[in-house]
Image 1 (cartoon, rainbow, N blue to C red):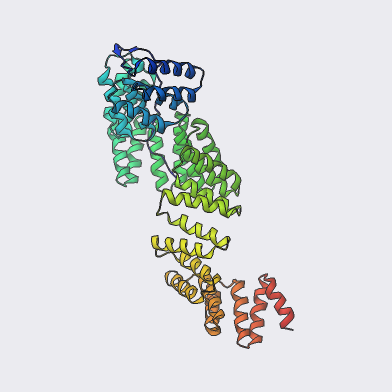
Image 2: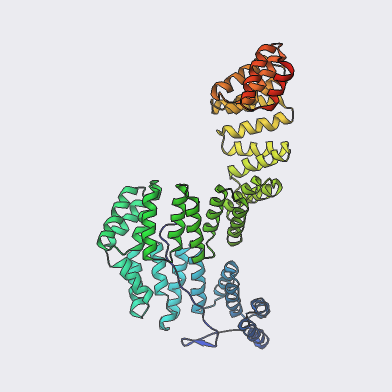
Length: 497
């Protein structure tokens, strides 16, 4: 589950099209036919026929109109296709386009992708192209947020000052909150956090708050540091204060939800994640974390819905695919679970848990060879995982490879000498090889580790029966029957009177 540190909102608007902007003449190119397609696209866009507009602009671009790439990028923005828009803005710029809005539009997408350095460079380029454009086209406010995300609070405050001088109320508010206090304490808090000095970071944020108690970001970051120290109640208190100062901070709601989740306040966590989603409907992590919380409330269908939404927003979220697969497996939809685990592995070929649980799902479908393959891959990634060896041993057992099963159970026991499951299953494999004494030893060890292990009593009884010791076998079956094992109870009734 992902926690977010020190992120600020960004505002952007898009310009309407015309032949000139700020004294800059736009070179469209492509000839009259391309210009006709471009004009058609504007009419379709005005009617919200964005796909139709894109089709016309594609034809204009094919006819040599470079500006059509920029316009097509804007249409894709309206369709929430940020990746497609980014590609088109880049084509326009790489082809020599100099329209300042192309750089600002691409900067906004970079910012949303946390590519703050690239966003900053594009904003600065747009100013160099047109330094005299009216304020609403000036990106100083957004530049300030890029600098703040890169840790340059001094530079951020200077840019917000420029924006504020031109009438930007948001910038004026940010100056009040983030710049009119001892920046040294705030910057020091960030540096200490990044260097792992969480207590030092908390002390610096506390000092900043003492100087100015209305800094929502100081509360937010102090809550983040407390969370990392597992002071979940303290983190919740700080996130709550940050929310009181900025009720539209989706990250604060999401992080408070995460702290509540760790305190097992699942309903409270869901409430916070839901609020974060209301503020930002494209907040993939909030959907993903809400899904995980629903899973712990045994609402697997609701969890799957949330994971699916997270995947729609971010198709490369390996954890959303993995967790959705886990919930599908809980609903016994093993084929679909395998599909999701496979997708998670495609995104991250070193995802141990995805291989392990895909093997588990294949076990449930009786695809034991496939399960062995996945457990083997999991073991290659994490060689000291006893459960992977133990489960691979079980798959080998089902394929009647008893010696191979014993080898895997033995390795699991070496890694975890208190693995009662491995001892008991190794005993079963030995019993099938007619090593009854060895089997009894393993069942006995499993019982020593877990005195309530009914299957170990039942199976030890069976091995004793195979050695001709019916009296001791009955004693074990009676013990298993006392733990509720019906099969043992039948054996007692039929064989032990």
